[in-house]
Image: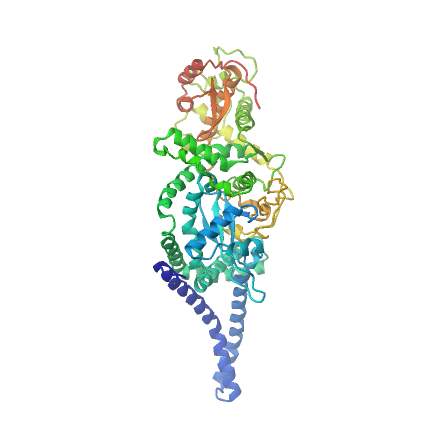
Length: 620
């Protein structure tokens, strides 16, 4: 460990954590030590008498019970599987240039090289210790090659942590920018190699894993009672060392940042701007573009490539992002991978698993979709399915064209039917008198809407809930796995039951190349009941559902009567194209109809684009 002030502070805090561990051990051994003294005193004839005999009879069983309890706690802490982040392992054969860059960076920083590299579908990078026995032994070619050290035949050398890189960084950043961003992360392997810091981290991770084991459900009453005591002790120790462990990690981070200042410092300042921009583009891509596809049972297979398109579009629209797209002429960091397309597909599937809770592998109801197919396969289908659901609800409510409507009663699904029903008409019979509906659960959400809008929104929400309940497929053999202890209690991390480098055919993209990225068994990483681990958005409210379905019906009418086409906007998701241009100002008019019952602005907008609401539309 270097002489950085942060490293010295981290070691000092690590020693405090280890002292807490030593005190806990001393407390566990104290009754046994006293019992040994009493027994030795009886054997030598020095501690004799009724009082000493009573003390021996009382304290010896207590000492045995305390030792057994301490042994049980130590066994659980030692054997509990620490949580591990879900990632895509990258072998050196799959990314030799990336490994070479990281190794050279570690040499410049004079720190041990990371033992392996993995990718995560998020805009973050960190070091992760995966040396626990439950994580499996690391492959020789991954760890020894990058660290540059041979394996000793008689004793085991410490293994450096794994470098986890956010996959969007590889596609958006240039090679120099990625090196500058990774410099302070890789520098963290120096303090991590110190024995005191490594021991303190193992102790804290073991306690955290023990808490997860004790909190796991579906256990027998006896084991549940025993593990409840183990969990209480582990939580007590965690509370005792929480502050010192946090200060230790801050010291490690400060030492790594100080050591990395000598490497690409000026470029790192510029690269940090790209980190924020990549995060904004990634979040927008997931919430606006990927989420509608996931809800349709399709997962975009090139999310990382989509980040580049989204951020390029942002730089075109936003003057604050001007100049960022000019970097695209330089070599992208994804060129450091042998097969970037296969890695992108694996990361995209993992992102769908984490953020939406999709199946572990492709299937008939969970298939990939390319960006060129997105408008037809996702946007068009989504609009028509939503429009069909809207008309099913109207049929169940017995809605017919309003008296005096100009639309002919053809019995077909028309936009006029929806507009006439939601329009507030003077003298019209209140809908609640024709089809009573219990008040919606979310009164605050539907406050400020017309009675008909509130009723229709509540019916749509109930219909969608019924569809989700009845359409939930039974778990396939690929997705049924026993719940892991860490996943049951930690919503932000997971704990696999197999080695992170074990490839599976269900989750990895089909490829015959030996350089394809190894993909973990995603079915073994989580209990499906805990998914999604990171929900992107809260469930849509009834008002939002009604607005989405009404917008979908309008878009279907535009496509069938005015020649409009579905499109993809990289920043806003599904969009309607009319004469090759994106339509605008539709959302305010839809909200005016829902909240005020006034369809005049919307009808004027439809007439301006030549959309005929009285014509039947094709539903999904």
